[in-house]
Length: 82
Image: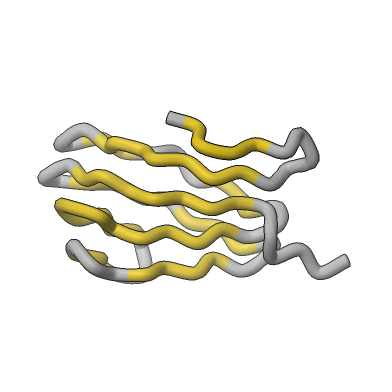
């Protein structure tokens, strides 16, 4: 669910990841910050349970997945290094 989208690459969303879901590897143009509201998400760098704040710098890359499913607050695009 998109909460804010300025049309210039900046957005705020609530996202639900189903149990067993694997999200393909992707780059973060403009960076991304994620707050895990419930459940757990993981990637090749670690596991992030409820209450974790994750910061993906501009240009970073990861391949997230969730064994149990999760609900995320996702803010994208605001960490650009222009």
